[in-house]
Image 1 (cartoon, rainbow, N blue to C red):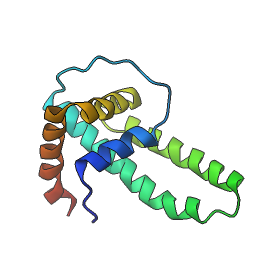
Image 2: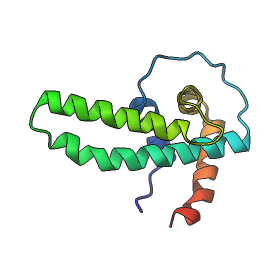
Image 3: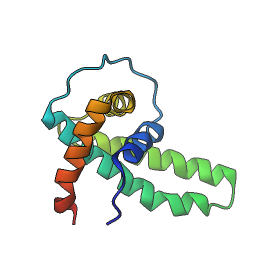
Length: 119
């Protein structure tokens, strides 16, 4: 399995789910919430990896757009399927992590703890 750097994952997380911006105050996220977020990121990453070659190989812009919309819906469904995580929370944590080195460090620890389970 490809190991992604947490910053890259979080940036991907924000860029992938492009719903309306939700103003959620930066808060102290529980370890359980960060574990749910990390699980959601891994699910989203798997969908991105599956769809990327198809979207890049699409024969027209319309096909690319249709596939991207389908992939986006799958990502939303995957995030909502993670216990303790919503799309809004997912986006809020990803955005907060970009500007909060302490939160990013906590997420890095969660991803490292998850790594043995993913292998």
